[in-house]
Every structure is written in structure tokens, then in C-alpha cells.
Image (cartoon, rainbow over all chains, first blue to last red; front, side):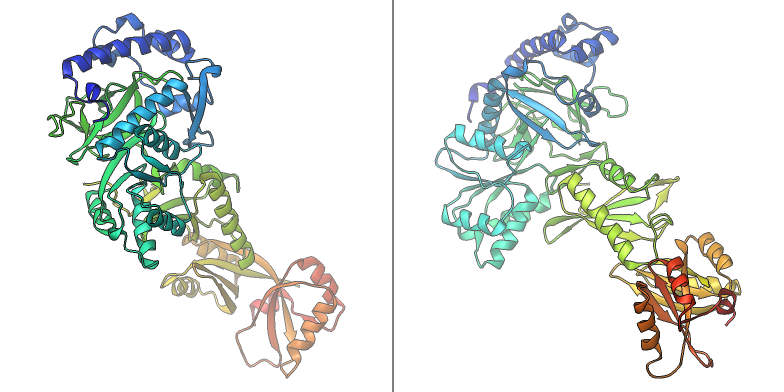
Amino acid sequence: MWSPEYESMSRQRLEELQLKRLKATVERIYQNVPFYREKMKTQGIKPEDLQTLADLKYFPFTTKEDLRENYPFGLFATDMDEVVRIHASSGTTGRMTVVGYTKKDINTWSEVMARSITCTGGGPRDRIQVSYGYGLFTGGLGVHYGAELVGATVVPVSGGNTKRQIQVMKDFGITILACTPSYALYMAETAEEMGIDLRTLPLKIGIFGAEPWTEQMRREIETKLGIKAYDIYGLSEIIGPGVAIECQEQEGLHINEDHFLTEVIDPQTGEVLPYGEKGEFVFTTLTKEAFPLLRYRTRDLSLLYPEACACGRTVARMHRILGRTDDMLIIRGVNIFPSQIESVLLENGDVSPHYQLVVDRKGNLDDLEVWVEVSEELFASEVRKLEHLGKSIKQKIESTLGINVRVKLVEPKTIQRSEGKAKRVIDRRELYQK
Amino acid sequence: MKVKQISVFIENKSGRLAKVTKILGDNQINIRALSIADTTDYGILRLIVSEPAKALSVLKAEGFTVRETEVIAVEIPDQPGGLAGVLNEIQAKGVNIEYMYAFVGKSLENAIVIFRVEDIDQAVALLKNSQVNLLPEAKVYSL
């Protein structure tokens, strides 16, 4: 364990620590962030009403819409002078979700990532290839800082250029690979084409996240790469990768509960559910300075394991993500909302044509096809004009989403409608276990 | 001199073309000429029919994306070099052709070719006093 004093502390002491930190967080956001102050006032509640951890349920939730409405820095709780880093992820519409970190927040993030790497069996002797994207996305830099703190040798390859990735992995004697699970499989395929057997390399651990995956995929990755594959969970709003990580028991992900307080709620009623029931995960940050979040609704569905883990950690474990409460898609690690595509299509005319997103996994890579029904307004008798229409939609979507898509023009009424509402997404990947 | 063509958007899946022609047949609409432009995913069916307005409304009612497009019909001497002569004339007038297709053969003295041009009004004006013989609308539908 990286920090046994926290990761294996008694539940009673952990809860005392959580309450102390929670009180401080609530007090601070009430003082520093007008949004939270107003919301608490509307709800008729004050920071001093928080006497036990269970009292948290009386406090208001924070949603992704709240983040959007306070774009870009409205929810920051420190002076901008204190902020040393900004990250961002795509939002439901044109606006990004922006998060900030103070020096201490970066240290906290490095700490939880160091715990995560240690949890999978990694250490200072390892050489870690970070193939998550570096940039506004939290994946690359998040893993990077944690790996440096551990004392491992970090190779910041970032995403893309798969052949070079394989070359680096082989020539540098990489022992830990960090990327999305689908990219790991794609690497395996590319290595095979290059005549390199990844199973013969020193590579032994994979830290995979940023998208949902299944047990079946894990087995496939483990077989093809000759490694143990670990699931890591995180979201930029809370901190980035490192919110929770699997240990070598591979029975659920340990949540860094001394930093992130976890509730599981009924997504319909907002009621807190008993331990072990499936619901929406809600996190409250306990130590973050620049961008603290109160009861943030993740839209991720999962459940908490009630039993203690054989590895000795006392922090709670969550099951891998079992689904979403909204229509967000994660494609090649990028969060995508159908509404983003709708707004692109609206630019082409007054009325948005009917569309459908068809997601599939082809050759281990996610493939997004956008079906657009050709209405009379869009139709022309010249092939040239229709091809131009398809291409311009494709380019606009690609520049908005930042990933490649294929646009297919289809006849009207091709897209299924149920109760008058079109089904916007067909996901054939079967990423969530039934 | 302008002729109404019916254009139909057709996805590349079996039975769609049969469906269009059946709808027209059931409504006593006669197909005079047709062409299909195809791409990997879809095709554009272009039709000259006996009753374009009716064809438009019945196809629309069946859920097809249909559009009326104006084209010109040119009579061409049915002999070697006939089309070449006409194209030469059209080119000399500076008319740009988007696409063209021939009429379904019938025992006519001359062949008939449909042209979709970039600027139809300009094309009609330019070709009126030329060697190119444009067919009037009513004659085309009833051929």
C-alpha cells in the first residue's frame, strides 16, 4: 500500500476524518462560492446543520448542468492566482466542463494515483507507458504525476501512432501500460501485424480506464498482452483518474474515501440507497481546494460491496460501472452526448433532421456512424451535392467532437421511433454487463 | 421548354426500386425515362413520368424523399455522331451539364436525351436559336 495509514484505517477513524473534512469543505464553499451559498439558502440549510455524515443527504446536489451554467470558473472556490492547472472535458452542448487545481490539489491527485499504481502491484522499479492523451483530458497528466510520485520511470507517449507505441513498449522494456481498454486491444492487434508477440515482453500490468468495459474484454486483453489488467475509475469533475482502482484481488474498485465521499442514490427520487444496492454514484470532494464539488451526480450506475476486501484495504469498493442514467456515450475514451450532434445538424438548416448514432466496435476500435435522414430540404438530384452534404456534416461533427465519424445518409423513417420519439443511440458494443 | 423530372432518394437496400415503380404503376403513372446515380450507401433515381405532379404526391405519401427538378429534353438524330453534334453545340454555348441520360427506346425517328444543366433558364435561352432541338414539356410526358 502506498498510504496504509489511510487506505487501511479503521472505518470509525475514517468516518471521523471524513466528517471533519466534509464540515470544512461545506463551510468553505458556503463562504467562497455564491452558487453553493444560494443553493443552500434556497434549501433552507446552513453549514452548521451538518453534524453527522448522514446529514449530508439534506444538502443540495450539483449536476453537470450546474457546471455548464457556471462556465468557466464560476464554481472555483479559490482565487485564480492559486490555480496552477486547468483541465476540461466535453459537455452536453458546446460548452466544456472546466475544472481547476491548486498546487495542493495536484499533490492530492498525484497521491491517489500513486496509491492506484501501487494497488495494482506497480512500484519504483517499473517503467510506465502513459498512452492516455495528454492535454485538456485528465488521463495523461493524471497518471503521469502519480507515476512520478511512485518513482517509476514514466514514458509519456500520449495517444496515437500505434506502431511507435509498440516500438517504445518493446525497446524501452515497458512493464506497465496505461490507456483505454479498447486501445490496449488495438495495440495487441497492431503488434501482431508487426510480428511482435507482446506476451514475450516484460509488460506485466495494464491500468485501463476512461471507458466502460466488460470481464470478457479483460480476459481478452490479459490473454493477448500476457498481463494482469486493472480497471481504474475517475472523472475530471472529481479529480481525474484515481478516484477508485482495482487491487490484485480484482473484486471491485477501492475508492479513495478519505478524499472522495461516496453516496449511492436512486436516480429518480434522489434518496440515498442502502449499502449494496445499485444506483447512481454521487461524490463529494473532501480535500479539494480549487474545484470542490458537493454531492456531484456522476450519472454512473454501480453499487458498493458490503464486505471487507482480502487485500487489507478498508476503504469501500465499488463494482465496475454498470451503466449510465443519461445518454452519454464514451467512444475511444471521449465523452459524447447526442445533443452535441444535434446542434451540429441544426446548423445545416432550420429544422434538425432525424438522426441516429450507431456505435460498434470494429477490429477493437470504436466506430461511430451517424445516420441522417435525408429530408426534402436536404435532398438534391445531383450526387455531387448530396456527397457535399455528407462531407460537410462529417467535418462539422468531427471538429465538434474531436473524433472521426462516418456519416450515412438514409431514407426518411429509417430511424426507429418509439412513442413519436426517435431512438438516438444504438450501441452494439455491449460494454455493460447485464 | 423545361421538363419536370422527379428525383427520388433511395437507400441501397433490396426492394426499394421495386417499391417506387410499384407505387407509380398502382397509380397509373407511366415511366417515360429513368436513370440511377449510385454511391456506396444510396442512389438517386431520376424519372420522367406521364404525370409528374401526381407522381410527386403519391411517392411523398409513401414516405419517400422526392423532389421535382427541371431538366431539358433534347431531340437527337438517331445516327452515328448524332449525340456528339448536340453536345458540341451545347458546349459551344457555354452550358454546363450536371448529368444526362437517354430516353427509354421506342420506335421514334429520333433519340431523346434528358439533360440536367447548371443554369436551366440560361440554357433554354441559349439553345432556343440553335441547331439543338428542345422538346416541349407536354410532348415529353406523352411520348
